[in-house]
Image (cartoon, rainbow, N blue to C red):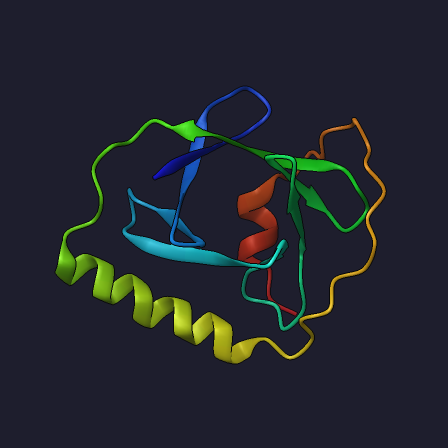
Length: 119
């Protein structure tokens, strides 16, 4: 699993099999499909490229770090994650992500905020 960190390099989630996972809550928060990032909304909230999660406005919302957590979820937990990921995937209606201009500025809200926003 790869760590996902905020602007202060605090781990906020993990990326495992393209699922964005909050291990403290044992919950799937979003998915990465291609390079598009999805949460609860029907359309992308941003993109992942060059190990940087970016909001649609180009601002940085998180970083993808190297693999730091060597353990993987146990099979029952991973099955729960996959079911939750399918729920998110079934909600996606617009999977075309717009071109995003890179911006060096950090968004004040961060990845978790955007993943949990509903439209």
